[in-house]
Amino acid sequence: MSNIVIISGSSYSGSRLYGLIEAIQNQLKELGHQVSLIEVAELPAEDLIRANWNSIAVKDALHVVEDAEAVVIASPVYKASYSGVLKTFLDLIPQKGLERKVLLPLFIGGSLAHLLTIDYALKPVLSSLGATHILQGVYAVDQWVEKREDGGFTLSEDLLARTLMAGEQLHSVL
Ligand SMILES: Cc1cc2nc3c(=O)[nH]c(=O)nc-3n(C[C@H](O)[C@H](O)[C@H](O)COP(=O)(O)O)c2cc1C
Image (cartoon, rainbow, N blue to C red; front, side, top):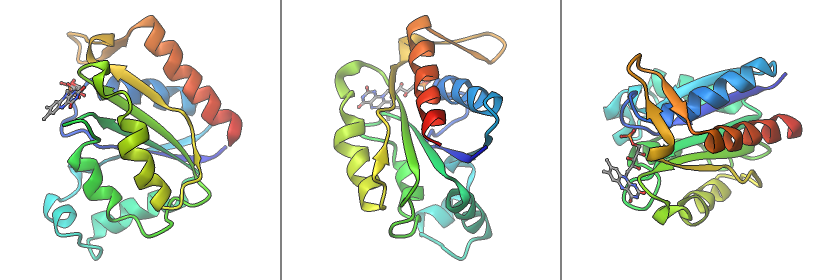
């Protein structure tokens, strides 16, 4: 059993990104892992924007990352990159704070146009934080995640299969 943290860079909890997050979170829990979720948008905005390392909420979240063997980085694609919300938190992670951790990117965009965001925008940041083991990850498109009336999400068959495969891959290296 490993400690895994999912960092969500979504601005709001109703985002289809949570369809991906829920799928992988449930899977990893069923596989016996301890899974935590950090919703960056729920941390005090002023602490994030002013990079307040003395903030209790920020310290607590950073401890969760420190204790994790694996980090799932979940973000919507905004303006051809990961979200600014996510970056406010990544900026607070100490130098080499992702060393010896397995990283799994989980992204969703409005189209496939920005598929390479994970490679061109996210990976250099993760590398600068010491990550050397970055799994291929999942890139989803909005239309593959249906919002249900009960507030839940239904992933397309192919997306669900790819997401679960990514979870399996993460599990196999822990
Ligand atoms: C401010 C903003 C910028 C966006 N920029 C992009 C973009 O550059 N490329 C892209 O594929 N999708 C872009 N999108 C679409 C979102 O990635 C996508 O709608 C979101 O991940 C999932 O939708 P939901 O949060 O409404 O469920 C953008 C959305 C917003 C709100």
